[in-house]
Amino acid sequence: MTCLACQEKVNAVDYKDVKILRKFTTGQFKIIASKRTGFCPKHQRQITQAIKHARFMALMPFTRAQTRK
Image (cartoon, rainbow, N blue to C red; front, side):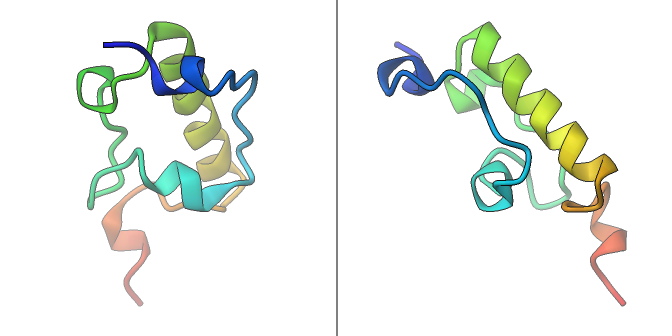
């Protein structure tokens, strides 16, 4: 199985694109493992760093409890 990002020749993952990053988190906002996403290690690291950066910049919540008000 080949990496989807490698097939589409994605060079960088943008942390500001929250709609795409939400696809790689569970309902409790945990990062999905590369076995389930199908990404190669390089792109999985980029996705993980982008999600962590988006959380730090308050674009994405850290936990599900932060979404409830």
